[in-house]
Length: 121
Image (cartoon, rainbow, N blue to C red; front, top):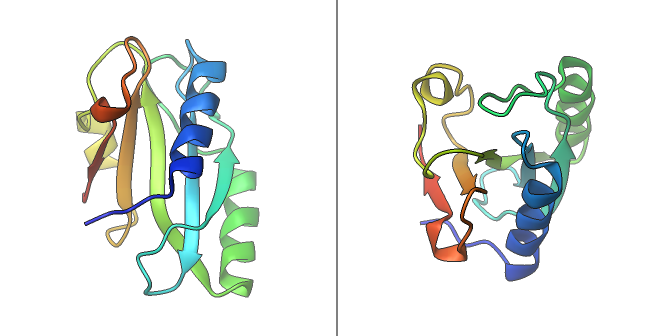
């Protein structure tokens, strides 16, 4: 089960709404092996698409190096869906590379907090 502090949920919602109509993305890092999301790291969507996201490759490399140095891992990988529900798309599943992470999807078309969902992929 995933538990995220309300201030982190509010921050990812704000980011998703500010980036709308483009998909937003980012991670919440936590201590390795803890399953405890603590540090929000907004990422750039390199595709600038309303239907797809991909972390900027240079930023991803930098962030993963920083997490490694801090003994952290991506506990949550989040992104928004701008025109659909909070369920993983085929490309979300195909491109999921962190099996230990929770994948959180924020639907921004008609956003209600209870519609934000988390998946293990």
